[in-house]
Image (cartoon, rainbow, N blue to C red; front, top):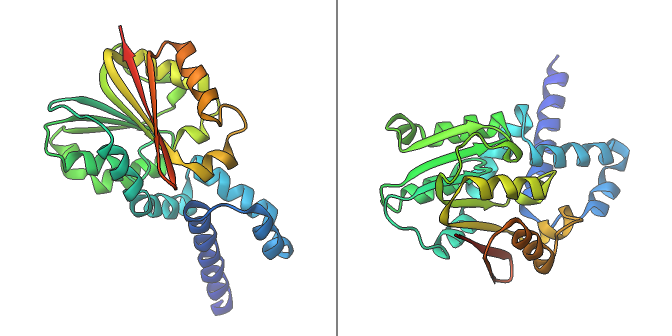
Length: 239
């Protein structure tokens, strides 16, 4: 029994390291496949990629807690690029561990913040982090799919999608839904690590392809900003 306990701890530690590697480093499937081929490495890699898309269970809990710290810098950078008026109604699609919402609250601008994420584990992690703000109704979190947003038309002044659009199954439908819930004078912020875009996106992976898609949906202006690690799009809806 003691051996089984040690074996369980070892496997959990291995899953933690792999989950952390997928999130933090440039994902190199060939390296993992070489190292873990004798341990069912290919299946393990695909499992962890699936967890990154929709965290669940014990491994999902680990991933969402890593997200809370790892994406803090990307979140702060994206917020810094954004004009956020006082009293704005904001939606974050794919709030993960809740770090972006926490950073928005720190601005102290009396924001009305909503969040939606497909993962129940993300919901639990973010709820623990943001409990005080949820209790005073400044933050409202939901579990749901970006392809079918449960909000009324023209509802939000600002929408954030940070390190999340790379995982959406139907990008066009997702952006159409976001467009629908945005007010007639509003902004969408899309931000991601460049390397994750290259790895995860087979369609709309370039700036020109993404801009064409967004323009076809009805967005009036797309501005791109980037540094050596990240890329951000400021997407304007004006009617």
